[in-house]
Length: 508
Image (tube, rainbow, N blue to C red):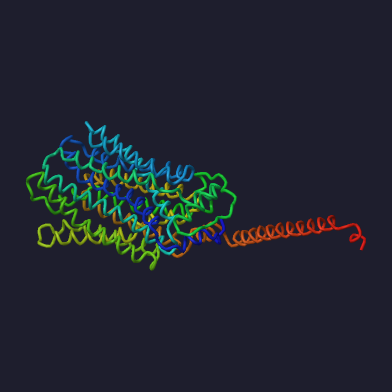
């Protein structure tokens, strides 16, 4: 695809319109639901453990069922997003959420809950590649990073909303069965979002990639407010999932999938069990079970406010510092925060132990949302070309949710064997691996159009030169064709004028 396409250049340089904000908001709300589900199960988990008397293994399966479903949803529906279109999957993933979030709240056993949450996870996982791809392909170039990061920031809003809902539910219904309300109320916003997503247009870049030129021009005109015409281009050939592991793409595949996998081990491993960690480290003196969990939930609301601060910093810095620097620094901050949290029990018999715990969570939450959490979501959407964008993002998100499942399954088992402080120390060293991977494989994408990134990073210098020569030949061929047509028309006019002249004039 040429970088000089006037329609896409207009989209890259456009001012934000109502259509841009609508596309961004309805995509971001899918991430809101993911954040909500992440934290609401953390709040509900102590109640589920009490009601069903589950083992440590079943506890891990309850919190990991949705991330395991996300692996399948992100990988499979990421591929379908490139094959069937962005809008189709934006609808399908929310249908999964509405149906299985509702059924999860009606679960009659641990087994049924795990099954429903696995199916719910398929819908959540599907939303990652499609929402990021849809935002990426519709936003102006200069604001693309900010819009992606701020869209992903809705995850923090969802977590905060879930914590607030959990606290409110326990206030109005202080019983073990309150978990049903916590899991079921998310259906209401999901239905509203589903209704409005039905009105979204298809991505113009996907339409052009499939050879639907007129529709692509129509949507691009709607987004920019200008009448645009897109020249017909040859539709992209069939791509394969295995293209992600071609030498051209393998570096970015390892970077995006590996860093996201590591980030989710730490992030989900901590936040799945945040109320429990707080209860163990800070609120153990409370004798009453409901009071202890309620206090821990209020503490979780407090520390999760700093996720919002982290996202705010990312929005301000992503186009200044760049993606790679933020991700690398964020991984270091995550490790430092985890080391501080792990050290809290050493001060448990002293006054400042709660302040130290709070400082650790503040460092962790600000760092994770300033860097790795939104940037690992952003990078796959920029680093892969249109025909592989959602496929690459889906694979990276699937690997990420495998990391989340590892965090959910391994953390309680590991904490049982070696203790919670030692487990948090290990998570800290895992985060340092994320820093190393980012520093070694990262390359910057800020300030570039999607087509520029595609050409610069997919091809080497010789290939770029050949591409330019090929484009010059195509333009020259077009010019020669038009010249030939003009000469043929002129010759035809001469012949017609000669045939219409009187015989005497012809003899002259």
